[in-house]
Image 1: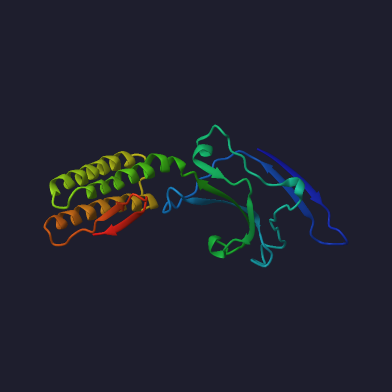
Image 2: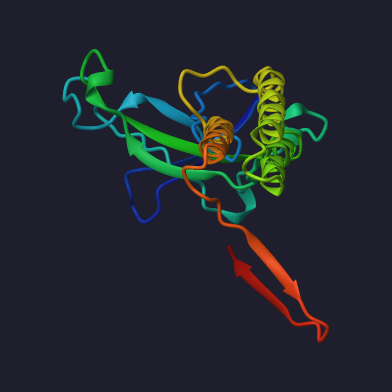
Length: 239
């Protein structure tokens, strides 16, 4: 890493000089992700820079001066983030080029001597690219589930033929679920994609239950018929 310092003396008899600090480094950082909205989740990646000097007044015996971390608002020193286009991050996530800054103070509970320190939080915004999951999981599972509608083209008394379609869809969903499970993160809570997959299973079960009850003749399923006359007038009636 490389570091630069530039000291600006106080103006008009001021007491506090300004130190411009630049730091170029390559490092690895880790943070926890909230994947409850997976695969359309977005994350905030914070990086907190803390001084080693306590603020004035936090402890009168040790703090005789104040060091405050602030963002350099000079347009010549813009903060940005770049990503290697060949890395896995660029193919799976979209990273904001802007870095957000916020100034604050540390909590006394975090210091054994109950001191407070100046903090500068730098934050990046990263969003997941959901196109991979849409093409390989969401859309195929939607097509498989909507194949249940084919069963309504068969008379409700023919439960054997209808159940073959429903069971075929259910077996396809189960097989697809095991393949997709190996691609999804292992979590102790449900994500958006988990709710979607479970919804497909519940919908298939509901269709199979409805068709089994309808086959007993307890109720008559509504039928939509189209009547086309010679003058190309189309009339739809529900039976």
